[in-house]
Image 1 (cartoon, protein in one colour):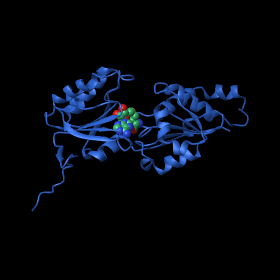
Image 2 (cartoon, protein in one colour; image 1 turned 135 degrees about the horizontal axis):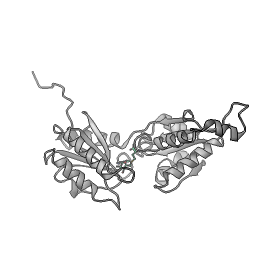
Image 3 (cartoon, helix red, strand yellow; image 1 turned 45 degrees about the vertical axis):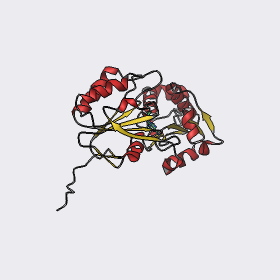
Length: 268
Ligand code: SAH
């Protein structure tokens, strides 16, 4: 009998921000598959289980290994930090399973289980995606309430997305006055993009627009800083950082960022 795959968003890191469903799925799983940094974040639960862990850039291999294990009957938890459906593993797992499933009859014939009607192959319905607290939720919470109005999430990683398209999206979001959450702002080998993005946004927003820079939100090493669009590049930004750029109405009060929703709260 085939097993199943849980695609689990483990949240930003602290065990307190792991959802109850994520926790039970991790307990239920026979095997946990994920990048080693994320396995470490949940090691209190992963203890004693089979672990499949490879480097960051081997996502496809990791997901293929997970699918193979599930087809052998194991319950497999594939973990992503934050939410598995936001720049996480959920889409890749679905894509891989769906692409295999384009020849179900042939595969069932080859497996020799046509008569029993049971297929050992995984279908998209053998996958359960378990949501988690994404970096934007965690960063927003520690900054105050910056996401109270429409916002756009943009990853600056051009590993899988052309840089031209990323710039176009930054420009469109800036022009439309969205609050902008930037994922993957910078890595050791990719340092230019955040400056270019900042310059694009500056063409549409004031220099003193509030900007929140949050590193390691809701896990060890958390750093929270509020600055401005003009000053943001003078601070420590890396791949463990999420940046939230306010819209034209966002303001700072007592060190916290607030974007008004539009309620009329003026005194009578
Ligand atoms: N699936 C994840 C995002 C993965 S992309 C989620 O939903 O949060 C990786 C990027 O997420 C990092 O480069 C960083 O920008 C952001 N990130 C993930 N965890 C974070 C945390 N605890 N604090 C700040 N940023 C974080």
